Length: 236
Image (tube, rainbow, N blue to C red; front, side):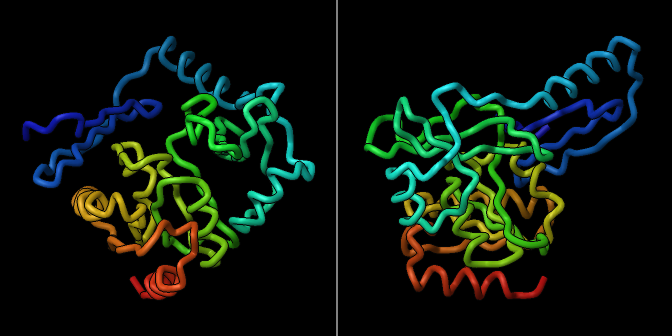
């Protein structure tokens, strides 16, 4: 219809077909009920049950119990508890939950090893952090540390890490129930802030702001934090 590449998604959500294109110039979207056979229903239930089993951490990934390297890292970025330690690769590990169940984890090296970030399953699309009751404002960032920074400096605001700099259809579908979106990718991806802002507005119509950062938000530059708090306090 529009010639877009990798901008179209179609899913069967338990008997309801949903389709969308998130290219800014395209308005293709819709939904309709579809017939599900007994076998279709059985497979959908099996997939749901499998997802509910969750992700089991490898044996070398253990709960944080005051390990010195992890403690220093947590103090550096003012991180809360609930983390893990990959003792084999010496990484601080953030569990990623969906509906209260751990479905994935991402680990950040503590000794400059490569890769800097390691995904343990790749199943999760986002990492979400919020302190208090979510108020409908979401700030989109790249990594889990930045997401935790958002919720620590802005109570009730949700930090959403897209676990990289590429935003997909699944990310946009995930944020469509929020009332305001603030794009706060790292300064070296500032052009993507503007691009994704346009796509989100085109796709969802949500009030979306592209934030220009002086430094990565996790480093809490005074100018950045002040601007973030101002944007989060704006109405609408």
